[in-house]
Length: 152
Image: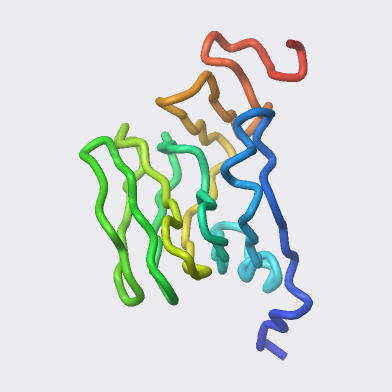
């Protein structure tokens, strides 16, 4: 059977960011649809953002591409260029290697649901322009000076 049983799909709540960067992302939930199907080269998630929750810290990827599609509700897309509201039916995309930090914030009073699609790359590095954080796919969370967070 190829149908994905969403009720049995791996689900993550909260954030894996080191403290205190995890705080604005604690009220988020990702249902990992691609993982449930056994896909290895693409990530497809159904993201639920409670009011005031962020999708992530503002970031960009060296080697991975991302696309978001708002299924329900509205979110504010924050990029280097400013802010814009995305409502149900709106979409945005981010090319690999373009240093434009981005994330979504739910500033509404309702839950927002967003479909996230992205490529996966074992050599990716994610940069976080607003905070002292970098994620290296092969070794995890680091300060911008390269020191691992677990060695702090």
